[in-house]
Image (cartoon, rainbow, N blue to C red):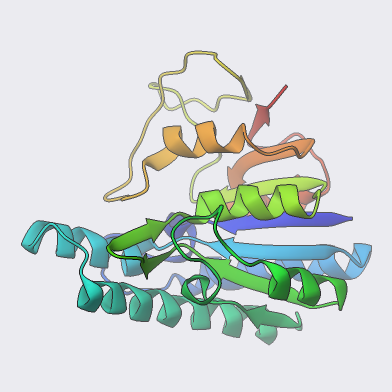
Length: 241
């Protein structure tokens, strides 16, 4: 079994408070991942979002000078590495042999322009690699989305499932009701409640998820990661046919 799990920034950070980790949510997510990992001897790659770390830094930079210069790139990288170390700590804390792969060290300009060898190598050797949305400088500062990384890695390893874990039950319609499944080209009207999300929010996430070749693509509550990994009908299923 193989899985790619995207831990959303809204799940593992408090978006209303800069640089604040939601440790209860992060640790609970780690425990669920550990349970699935041990029961299935699964290959798992974990990607996480920026939340009140990277997204906050980007928003602040864009408001002040509207350009991501080399120093701004450095600030974003530092904030994301700080969050990544918290994720690494939580996973190791429950017994997961996690390894960290900062995106700016493997990617040049976008998620299609990355050397994923070290991640694949760790997966093949029983480790659980972590990477994340990040900033790179390639003539100009660019943001590499964790959602894009998730889809790329999912396709690269032919993962059985791709799970996007958030702080809500899944994709919610304008009345706050859970949408059980979403098919390609179906119009939806959703709630997009992010305080700030420089990579496009839930609608952009849905559109990117359609590019995954996985049979089990779900956007779920962080409380249902284990259920989603086991193929249970939780959250919102993305039908990518």
